[in-house]
Image (cartoon, helix red, strand yellow):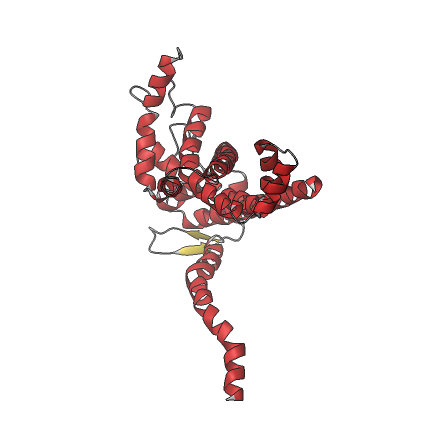
Length: 301
């Protein structure tokens, strides 16, 4: 029994986590490594699966491809326009939901509805709202005396419209994460601050935000990873199955460019090189985002 107990104590934890690592190895690690192998080949799916080893040729071509740099620039622009307002709005919504409100549970469930709604349905609705001729947004602009905007035709307008779709879908999700962290903050801190005469705004910036720093870092990194992979929104925003991101590629993202090369041009080797390059870009931005937020937090301390 002593030997069995010892084996159970030392071996059970490894046994419990084994299914995760098996699934990750099959559906995560293997596709990642295999994609890396494909990226070093001239791989055409239409040519009976024939492929030729070309080494770094796909990566060299990628670095000189103006379409890739245009797509990467569009991705960064949409990421900034969607992530920063999204996290600020989520923080504000969480702060409101943390107070005693009527139907508080229903309101908390309501902010999550955009996240569980089909992304196809959401994008189609917003595409109609941003329509040039009969869209609700242009109608509201007309009430203020401003002329209509062709949201899909221009770079800045299309980026703004897609950013609104992304932010609307993920703001509530981040708000609930912030809310859960807010509820873990000791109320003694607020009571002491109130006795010292601190206003509600001062309590928020001096107590709530500093206590939420780890959560803010987490949401910033996750939003960065998701924002740099955005593909469905610009694809559906174009109103067709064309993955060029508009007539002049004005809102084609890096993920959408990868999809075009892989499933329209059938250049799987080149598309794999794009995937690995995008993976490295996401890793660099996620690490930089993490270090920046940590440095800001340390400076404030």
